[in-house]
Image (tube, rainbow, N blue to C red; front, top):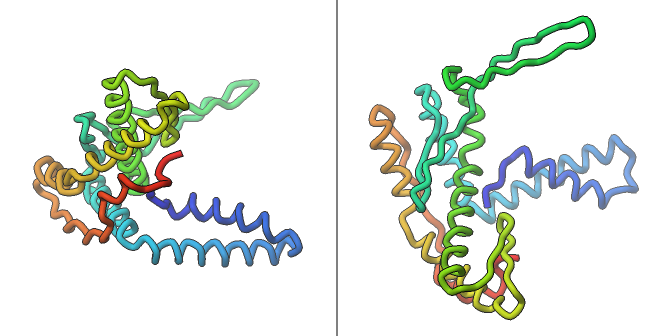
Length: 219
């Protein structure tokens, strides 16, 4: 999973904060910040390949947005995605009774490089998550089985859970056996020919086929 630095740090702060009630407020904040940073450092060491890929996605997004282009891509199900992040223009309207903020979200506004960069890694991963969900839904429908989902929580009737478990694992294997990052880089190079993109990071050593036999996979 993509671990966004700021949000992950806040989550770690909450978790650790709940376990250190005996400290005073000043000590608690310092201890929580230290423990949160240490936890994130350990996660980075455990998931080095994922971190490198996340960094690569951010670098690509930064190069595209610096060229005043929104980051866009096409999912494995051929769904086009365009990030809308721009430098919103705010206007304040003052009346006798209140102040109203009006925001211009025109596509003619300048690109927000920072938002494009930080949002792309999680957005890209979410687009793959949704692709996996749709592939599972399509296969379950083909089998004539009930299926519903919220993000990565998949449901069906209790009697059909074993079939759903097999289906979602096979769809996951099918999806990630594709050259997803290579296809993404190819599409970037075709659309943004003036940009010199960095090479794709080296992959980890996970045997993807093991997913099919994993006892714990989705909730």
